Length: 501
Image (cartoon, rainbow, N blue to C red):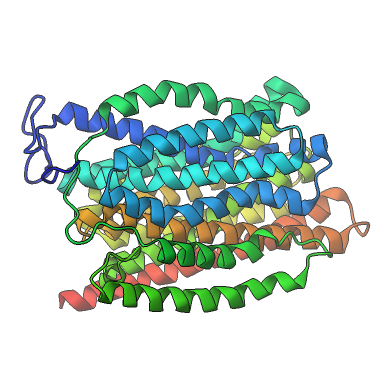
């Protein structure tokens, strides 16, 4: 079912007073209620990226899991997430974002239940992959719906809220996971991490069914879904991410996994050639390559990819260091990230409001704050006594969080600002693929540096010294990714300044 495009409450995206009705017949109150449901579900998918990290030691102990199995539990979610994003975004753009959202919500419910009752580590890993599939169905619809519901200043505010929620979900995930493990103990606690999703999804489903818009803008041109192109794209994303998912830092890592990158190059070339041929016949391609000619979209996607290579890896390696190195209980290890979450929420909300007026400089200064905060975190963990280190680390994580909040929301707003509304879902999906690929690469690189150091130094020094070195090496990898994001933001800022002359 299609209808004319959604309009903001007013042409500028501002409320006109009261519960104003837009040109599409949707009231301002209903818009924000629908947005709240969508963002609440998005936060669940991001929470499951971060809250599981703090449960890894308990899962490892419960099943006697190998490093490869643990990596599949952590990164298999990201892998499946990335593979499904673009086709689900494209289908949502062409047919119904609401329908795809509701399907994704049901799959997320089933996958969470399977994770909670998994009797073996293999079934847990498989259920996590299914959970990643559901997240890949959901996230593009959230971004597409946000584009559809708002324009102008209202869209900036919406993405500011979105960024704040995602920042809170990412940073509070370890704390929440730690609390659940503290309540349930090592045997049951990690299962509660997944059980938590079940009542939340059941509660959100009727609101999603009622509030999400049934109509959406007409998608001009062909409405077919390129199945062969979808398969090629899935193979391309899989072959890019899989070798990193299989990288654990253990001495027995199979070097042949890197041949998957050769397959990635071949499949990427085949995908581009097929899509051009398919489009040349007047059909609808799965990826609109014209999007990459939009400078703001291309540059913003690259910045987000580099940034998301850094931050999830930061929370994972910091949690490992605090628990294994300093001996903190999971709940206390999770609490160290609370200052990051709070600072990120504040700056996300504010920076989303000013993104359309100030532009890329907000992102640049945010990345500078992240670099300074992470550098202070590394120095605190490496130089200070174990009794003091977590407190000082929490302070520097607040600085990193303040910077991070000024990255996600403004970058999302700037990236999608010039994208046509009828391509909002697939454009958001491509950006999310970059973020998920970045996450897989970042987690693999950082954890490989972390565990490789432990294997190399095992038996040579005290436990704290070994884990300090491991965290230092992992953090240097993470800082390199943030540095890449900062360089890309500066280049984009320079390009914008040149264009304005």
